[in-house]
Amino acid sequence: MEIIEKYFADFTPAQHSQFEQLHGLYGEWNQKINVISRKDLDNFYLHHVLHSLTIATTFEFQKNTHVMDLGCGGGFPGLPLAIFFPETEFLMVDSINKKLQVVHEIATAIGLQNVSIRHSRAEDIKDRKFETVISRAVAPLKDLWKWSKPLLKKYPTTNENAPNGLICLKGGDLTQEIQESDCKPYIWSINQFFNEAHFNEKFMLYQPIK
Image 1 (cartoon, one colour):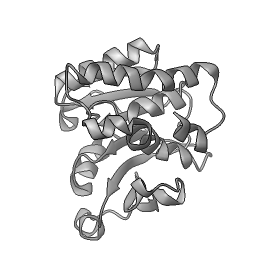
Image 2: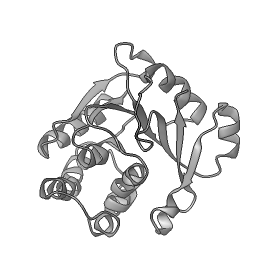
Image 3: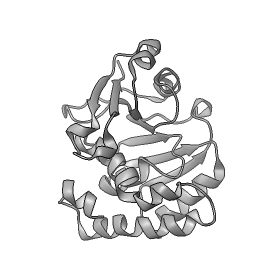
């Protein structure tokens, strides 16, 4: 938890408690369903929570807007962001139901009111639209954009930090992946926000809806 407080200092007591509870809850659930590697669990706040909160360094999700976490797995980046932005609605989507059950149980345990889950592939969702889609290490950018674009609605706002498009967290050399995607995303090195060796060669990409 100290690594989170190194970079973020304005949590309410409720948010602080929710972040603190995450490690123990994931530890308990990981013994039943393997959603996080043991190495990552030992570095839980750095590898998962702080990584997820990269998005909060640059973007401000607005009250009553809707965000979809595409391929949320065990709940990242969606759950930490749902704690950070309690007035934004998050839909956690994954094709593996047992991971979604963990997400649901942890969100319930810490009292999150702004999280729902759906067992589905993104391309099968036809009844919802979102201001933003988020994702972490799920698929190539080309596929993420193909799945996300039909789910995005134009969001008229004067807040330049309010995202309206796809935000994804990725690592490694992205040159070819970006070329093949036909996207022109904004790109940030995560090290410019968090001075931690773990984030070397890790990036945040943002492709706005046109």
